[in-house]
Image 1 (cartoon, rainbow, N blue to C red):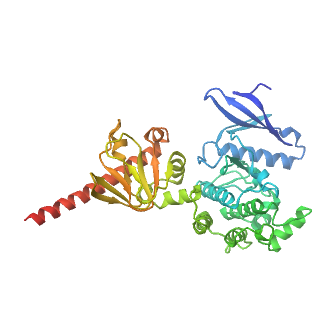
Image 2: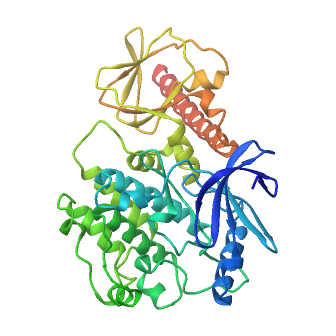
Image 3: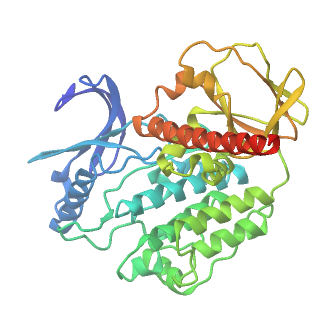
Length: 426
């Protein structure tokens, strides 16, 4: 098979009972894509055929709807008689399945970071009216050490969709009690399922071991699982508590929001022993807390995180030098810096403030006119204007708005100082 529709087939990536996945080339956009080709002809049971066709319709409805760095983009979907396929973003990496086995588990901090990113992605999906309903390791792709993309929204529940939703979908071991009972579902069913994923990644085993689906369903509804530390002793109490709260059978006792779930993961990192490396979890939470980024959406904050460099100068370290060239600008994520001219203190900048931005705003090679020195240990976010020029238009506009607010604030402070000087001179 050389071509499916307008896509050139490069090679097969995998196959299942009802579909084959191919690496393909979109020649129009000159990009690699993953193409999932469905074979509904093998489904002799009309009910099964209906479920799989509904899955394809759901993914087709989401084409272009979900745009988040941790969700696989759906570019195209075709339903034309015997030719049924979905075209998705190609992610060069396997799923979390291989890291959910006892002999190939990831470090605790990496697991916490992966689950945090899943929380933020599924929070975004919820904001778009989408509940996944089939969260499991096989549906989470891993790229690099801890970057993930959630895939396979074929079982998703979409708010305000007119067509009938198929019930009974999902993977039994990861289903919430309300999903097992076929009750009305909310985002909390995905919270439960992600809790099970976290349990499996921490321990290499499911919270409930059963020989058949009936036994599994009984345990999901009636049995409390042992904490992950029972199988992986180095698991700290904080992670035990997070997993078990996410998996509470009573929705009132479970996390009510994705933000609650995510914030407990941030707290886990905050309480961990100090280390030089900052995890993406901490970086994202820091960005969200800074006034400079207050109007940025979560998707735009992930863009900032992935296109910036983070540094941790020590107290007394020089950051910028008077007379040197450079166009990078910096945002203080933590600490205080001194602005100096020939050794004379001109001012102090604190957490959330920005410096070096005039080099960027000038639009050409720039000679620094002051020294910047760390007054305390600081955390810096460095932005390269050349990289900034390549990010989304929306994100660039947010930077422009943030600079404008900052300049207005500085002008107001300068006017106040001038007024005080004039008053003192009278």
